[in-house]
Image 1 (cartoon, rainbow, N blue to C red):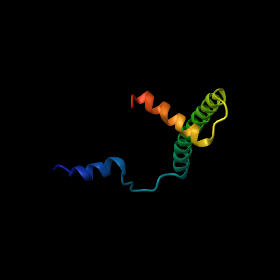
Image 2 (tube, one colour):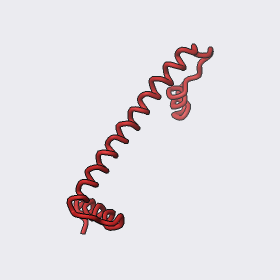
Image 3 (cartoon, rainbow, N blue to C red):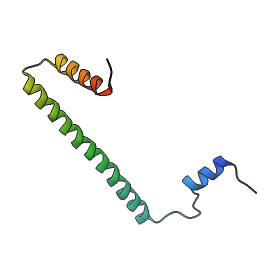
Image 4 (cartoon, one colour):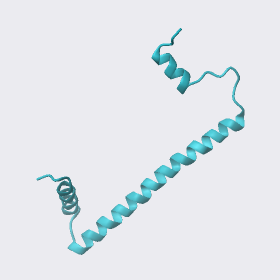
Length: 85
């Protein structure tokens, strides 16, 4: 007999265990997955900081700009990269 697709999905993604898993296995899963997520956030923050530094260096070369002028310059450069008019 064939199972409905949504039942198969739950059986694969969220299996039902008859006995509770060992505590060390729960801790290992949290450490492994938590470390991966923290690494992703860290890499994104480093890339964001580097991008901000590049934008600040470009703005320093142009002379003093107000925050609004700096934002408009960044938006115009992004628009030009995308080929907008």
